[in-house]
Structure formats: structure tokens, C-alpha cells
Image (tube, rainbow, N blue to C red; front, top):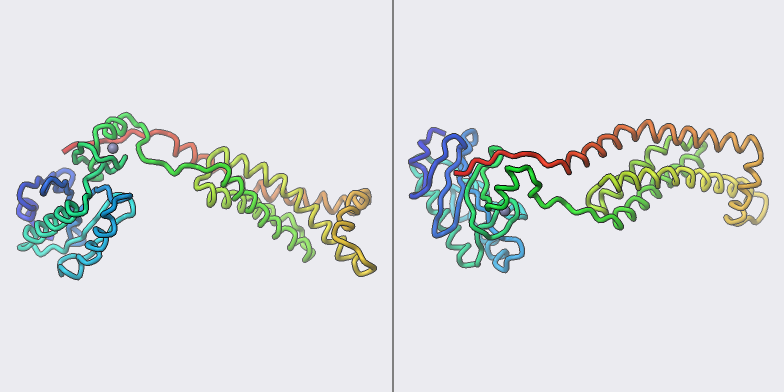
Length: 312
Ligand SMILES: [Zn+2]
């Protein structure tokens, strides 16, 4: 891409050389245009309050048609939050004209559908200014600028849902326990499923609870410790049922009620102890790294980071 940025820009736009971004307003709407040198393209970036807006469908339909209507449009899309991006092939001579056409069409469509610029971070419709945040071009409001510089968290972190997370963890450890029981029935040392219980528990919490927090990790570990014991008892119950049901009518409840009596047999007790020992050891050995990294990750997520904001 051998383009003089100053000659490719729509009128009234400014090129920030250090940040490699053009910015400017068209009919009151702020645009950022990033030259993608390697791809020989420009990326028009429009931060607007599309979510929850009545004009959303209309605007998305318009975006979908852009590529068909203009041969120089390589891609147009919406990130599902507040960012519309249109990739434009660079034709050198025609860049200014093409970019101006798109900027003008986008701003008149936004006007038609009642869509406005919004902050890239808090998504509020407020007075905004273009800036590079950690080198990434954005539109930010004053509140977010202050927070970013001071290291306060501005992104709306996924909120954790503890009750749902616990349900997810329970379902997860149950699934892991099923594996334990199955392995036990096949005659292997069920303990090798110890890791599966912990893993499925954490996965379940993460999936239903949206986010694995420290509380979540502790819940999962406690549930796993309990479930490993539970799985072993259940596994033993199944074995008894299978063995004894051949000799007569025995219900599952009968089989389970025999467990305390059987545990007095040193051979059975030793078998159970071995399963549990292997189970807990493997669960700890295999889960230690993933629990540790999950724990560390949670800590980092909550740690505010300083950002560099360069307003244009
Ligand atoms: Zn903001």
C-alpha cells in the first residue's frame, strides 16, 4: 500500500501518524479509519450504540448489503457489542472518494435509524473523543479516560452467577462420578477418574456460572472431595448389587445397606481405601496445575492495570 494518508482521507479528517489512525466526523458522527498496510486495506471503525437500539436490524441489514453494493468493500460487520467495522480495499487514486462514500452512507444510515456514537468502553452516549488506548484506537468518554489512566476497571466484566455456577459444578462432578463408577464396574482402579471429577466440576461452574471466581474454585474443590467419596461408595454399592443379585432378589437399596457391614471386612476396606487414596492423589496431582492457574487468572482479572491513553 503506497498511499499518502493525507490524500486518502475524507475532507476534515486528521491523520495521527504516530498511532497510524485517521479520525474525523461526518455529519456529527465520529469515525476512526485504520490503514492496514499489509492487507492493502482500510478499516473504518464506528463505535455506536447499536445494542438495544430499535434501528439495529435496519443498520445490520444495510451493513450486510454493503459488500454487494460496493466492489471495494471487502468485509463489513458488527462485533455484537458496539463496534461496526468496514474493510475497504485500497485503490490508491480512489481511496478518498471510496472512504468518503462509505463514511457518508454510514452516517446517514445511523441518522436514519437513530444510532449515535458511544464510548468504546462504557458504551454510554456522551461527549467523546478519539484516543489510542494502549495503542488501540478508540472513542472514549471523559469518565473512562480518567478510569483508564488511573487503572480502574472499565470493561464490564462478565458477572458471575454463583447459584447457577454451583448447579453447574454439581452437574459436572456428577458427570465425573459417573465415569468413576463406570471405571469401577469395569474392574479398574476407579481413582483415575479423580481428575475428571475436579475438571468437570470446574468446567460446569464456568459454563453455567459464566465465570470461575475464587469462590467458585473453592466450591468445586470441596464438591470434588465429597464426590470422590460419594462416587466410591456408589461404585461399591453397584458392585455388591451386581454380585449378589445373581443369587436372589436384591434391590439396589438392599445392596447399599450392606455397605457398612461389608466395610468391616478388611479386604473390602483395603480396596476402598486404595481406590480413595489413588483417587485423591490423582485428583490433586492432575488438578493442582489447573487449579493454580485458574486461581492466578482470577487474581489477575481483578487486578487493575494502568493504561496509556493518548487523546488525539
Ligand atoms: Zn465511557
